[in-house]
Image (cartoon, rainbow, N blue to C red; front, side, top):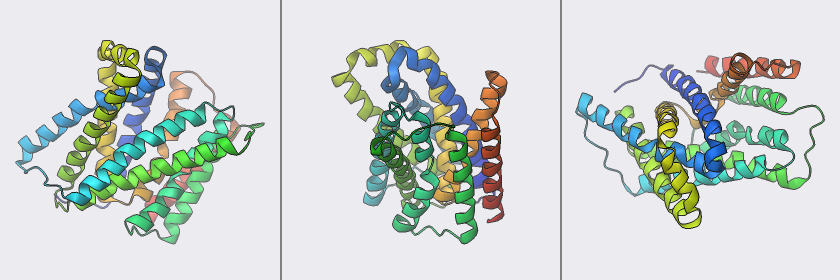
Length: 298
């Protein structure tokens, strides 16, 4: 299956939009399930929908399932478990007093993913792409850092940077898994990798919650009705992320993914009536300029 050069950008924007909705749903579930339970929603309730995506793809195209080799399993296992670690580090960072500052550090992910992509996958990063990454990331940092925000020591800084680095490595792991399949059909490569990745994460977190926090696991199962939509939106977002990873470098995808911040601003403005500050407006201009530079680089 061939793809037009700009299709990765469409997939990325669609993924960012779906993820914004999923995040809003998870936020609503956090009060009842806690952070661990709400995090598991994206994996446990997303996995069945990923299976449906794969079944539809096979039924419509008649394409055979991928036959992964050892490198695929190495990449996908790394991506799955590092993403869980990244989420845990992010939650730890959010527990610090310097919440907004650590979020700014987490959003350095595009810079780190460009470095890791070059080291592990040989992804090329041109000077225009580097400029786009730096401009867009600067915009997010400006939006995230509030006047009077304090770093509060080295711990929150390290937590934020390490979380961003872990998310970057997870993206590299999943892209490496997709590429290792060597399939001409990028839809099959992305969807198959998504199913395996979600299966690993669902089983791992289900075992952890069942053994360490069974009350949370029972509460999660009882809340299956509101969790279904969040799981669907999570699976849909992941499907688009993986399709984008199959077509473009992880650095390009994660930089363009910063449009999620703009989506969140729109939701806050029109959904919750929260006004946009001058600092946030300046940051949005930087993000838009960075995205424009990235698209012109292709």
